[in-house]
Image (cartoon, rainbow, N blue to C red; front, side, top):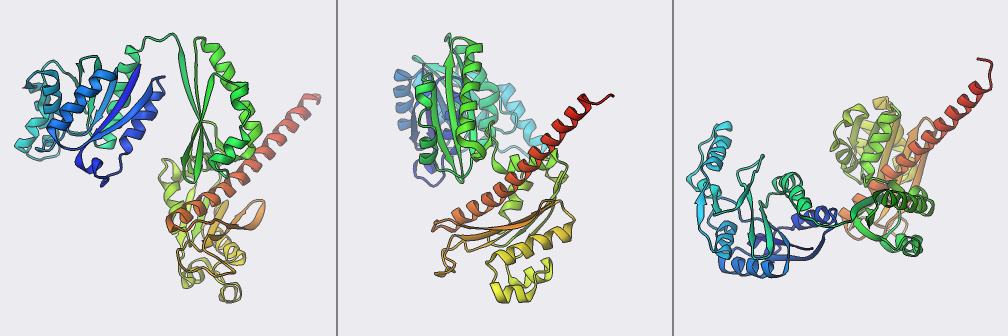
Length: 434
């Protein structure tokens, strides 16, 4: 079965807007076992859009189209689909009523132009949009089954997962079971990961191994199919065990979770709390952590002390420390972390101070230099890292991720100690007279 993606809109065609929709669609469709063979793009031109729909209908079985379902005159997916199918657009009064109610619920009057969003090619199946005013639709053009979805990412994702993917699975006439596994890693680039896992394909030829960079992390992807469900599960678990042996603590999550999520979960599991003192990362660590639901359980304080005066007045870093070592030094990082820890009463505190660039470096402390300090029950330590990135945003991301990873490894050590203590206690109880 062949599947393709078509993104529409002048803003996508011109590069003014990054097309994140197609990447998301490809990932979700490939999880069903169907390969996406091409990504296509076309602007807001009805003739060109009609032509590419007819072209796709000749060569693909499933086509996901995004964009062009809005209320304005440059939203042309409905018109092009009707032309390609050779039918008229018809008004769906039930859909129109839902769109009107959408505006009523927000105490607004529906503009007349939104009536266009209730027009569909005759015979199309409506795909409801539960969070917006742009319903989608599905219809057959020649051999291709088309799914038209809105371009707004949140709306598209919800409709894809809840309505399109289930319909596609029903169409698959395939004796195989498909499974995709994502392992998130940190600390190795794609080429280094590939070297570490070089013998994989020889051991598991039926599992396709892929790598996906999501800077500063890299995901290892396992794509697998098998006509026997039990054999598939057994083979995958064996492969994952082998990968764990090869990558060790470079593995962040076996289920694709990012660093911040893993760290947050560990803090919750251990009933511990965290404070953060940031200089060069400018609040990025705090932002990542507080993006997560439930972060109030463990996240106590964030102090973005960019200026030396803030490091002194907020965190209690001594003026003599800054005069002797400078803002970018392990002594300063330690003072920042211990200050945040004292200020918040947290179990752990991490601090970052460095040079993100592109200016501000020196031969002794070039751009990409960062000191990260961690304080907690096991004591206080600081580490120096250097990352050779010229771009400021890349450095901020890698600095923040390295800080979270340092905390992750510390939390894993605590987990290991608790497990050993539990095992020793169980062993002792087993051998006692009780």
